[in-house]
Every structure is written in structure tokens, then in C-alpha cells.
Image (cartoon, rainbow, N blue to C red):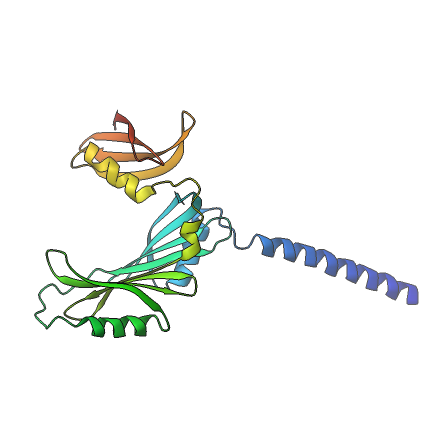
Length: 242
């Protein structure tokens, strides 16, 4: 009987050891993002009751990232996750419903400072400026707090926060390749075919160098524009019939 108990105890200990190994192994890779569905789930958990509108895989400053766009009520969100460990590198939203007709008095700089400090408690304001974009006055505020850079934009008349963003300060410090990013690649490609719509942007290799391939569609034609990932130079424009 004692021998059987010792055997059972030994088996139980082995089970715990192997379980521990498996759990440890799983935890080591739990944060890694290997597909768009995982990035989507993380973003939906962060921005509850939102609708995911787009998920992209890209290289931001040499880092493989997943960029998730969401929509909730009147705000559009953008979350950027590092693929290697699932760390959220950047979080931002933009208010899409803006009162352009308000005639309220433009708030003072000191009032804007108070609003910013309330939004980011204990944050340090590094710059604040009043800008006119042709339609309305806005206050743009930059702040820093605990390893993050913050960017806030306020309606100068209604005092409403229109844009909010933070990003890890080390995010930009990991720049090795200095890739221009998919947003800039799209902006560079669009003038090549006036009136076209960008439907796809992907990063890949061509003739030994990294390029962004941007697919544009206009009327019954599809175009592929190749752009140097580091310099932004347009390397190739190809027309493809749909």
C-alpha cells in the first residue's frame, strides 16, 4: 500500500512538473501576435463596444506591428500593437462630430492648460499652441508622463477634446530601418493616379530592397505603385486591368 502511494505521489509530482513547463511555455508566448484576429481581439478588449473597421500588418520604424482601426459612437480609434510581444505602443482616438459653427469666446491658454492637466494628471506640458486650420481654432498640446508622449487637441471655443493620443517614448527609439510607414506610402502613391482610391498597402521585398506596394483603383483599372520603404521614392507604376 505504501509503495502504491509513493508511486501515485511520484506520478502526481511529474504531472505538476510537466504542467508547469507547459504553462510557463504558453505564458512566454501569450503576448505574441501572429495574426490579425489576435490583434482584433486585443483591440476590442481595450475599446469595448467598438466596431473594428480595419486591421493592417505593417512596419513602423523597423518594428513589425499590427494597426487596428475601430469606431465607437462618434470616435475613430487607432491602436498599434508590437507583434513580438503584444505590447500596445500607441493609442489614439479622434472625434468625428465637430461643432464648426460655435461662436463662443475662444478659451485662454491657461484654461487649455488646466484641461490638459486634468486629462493627463501629473503630466508635464512640453508645448501648447493655438492653430487655425481654415475652419476653426484649435489648441494643440504636447505632454510627457512616465515614458509616454501625449498629444491632445481641443476645440478652442467649445473646449471639447477632439483628439487624444499617447505613444511609448521607446517606440520611436527602436528605429533601425527608418521605414516611412503605410500611411505615408499611401499619400505618396495617390498623386500617381489622380482620383484613384487606395485599396491595399503591403510591405515586401523587391530586387533586394524593402518596398511598399500600394494598390490603387480608378474606374475599371487597377494600379500597383512600388515605393522605396526608406526613402519614399516611387520606383514603379504598373497598370493592371481588372
